[in-house]
Image (spheres, rainbow over the protein chains, first blue to last red):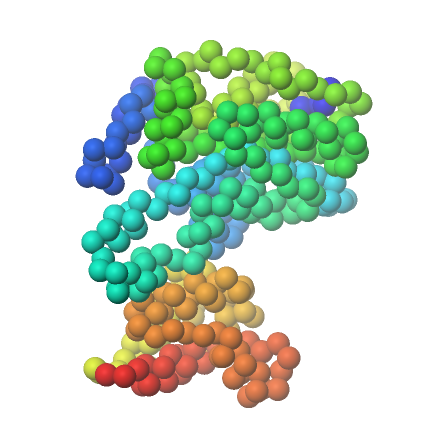
Amino acid sequence: MSRLQWAHALTPSSPEPRESVYEIYDGHFRVPRTAVFDEPDEEIVELPDGRAYRSLSRAGLLLVAAGLPASTVLAPLVQTDPFSVGIYCAIENGPNDYACAKSMSDTPPDEFANVYKALRSPKYYFKMLANVPPSQLGIFLGVMGPLYTYTHSRLACRQALEQAECDLEAGTVRAALVCGAFALDDPLLAMRSRLAASDAQTLSEAAACVVLTANGARSDWSCLPGRASSYSFGIVTDLVTLASRSLTDAAPHRPGLVLVH
Amino acid sequence: MQHPTDQDLFSCIDEAIRTVLSVDDAPIEPTTTLVGNLGAESIDFLDISCEIEKHFNVEVDFRKLFKKRQAATASAAPDISVQDLVEYVRDLCVNVPA
């Protein structure tokens, strides 16, 4: 079984679930029972390089917020051999371009290209790519090992954990940063995740990150705790559960273990 | 159509650079260089060109500007100053058909 060296999870502090109302479509798009971080995107995390704000989605910013503190445990490894640390990420970015689409809806065809260009930035495309946030996190941490990104809405975390386990077992990496994030800024993604959760669950934004190292045996990540929680964290549910459980089981030899609300 | 003054151009380019490169406090002077002083990368040039295009409706081709600087300085890896950019955009605006 791999050793869980460090864990960090971010979940909103608001106790009461509320309806998320999306202004696009004139406020008709509503997702019930949600919990979101109160901070606007630019206040979620102070990025080491401010330029990255233009290319990171909200989920990406949450991922970086959860992963940056891992530098405390990864720095010695990264300084010795940056290729010995891998990143295994579960994240999905929706198109999140509805404001532009709405603005474009009444544009005459001959003006379409110019209006479209004026409404967007070349970096906007990066916000839609799932592998940009973990890549950016890797740049911030100085990690140069393998990078995997999984986007399956329910299995991505387990796929990330399995791949990390495989690489640790094979000796490809000495440490695995398994991370994921889920945000509710994209209404269609939020609605799909809402439908996948039970009616009693609160659909919550979250990010989580764990650092694993090898200890000679293989872990069976299929025995992660079930989803019978009062919260669903979308694609990152399994990882938040794992990180939270690790905090509960925290032993003195894991002083870096924190759960931040 | 009245052409923008150098001051208009500088203000707009200053704003575009600050927006794209997230430089809030650093002073941007005409002699400030995009790569050497501000750390701009290739995707930033594309981003800056789009921001400028939104204001002046001219297509800024940084590749041409770099080649121009390369020829002028005989340097293999030339850098572009804000003043170079102002002059280049000014020339583009002058050549825009009314």
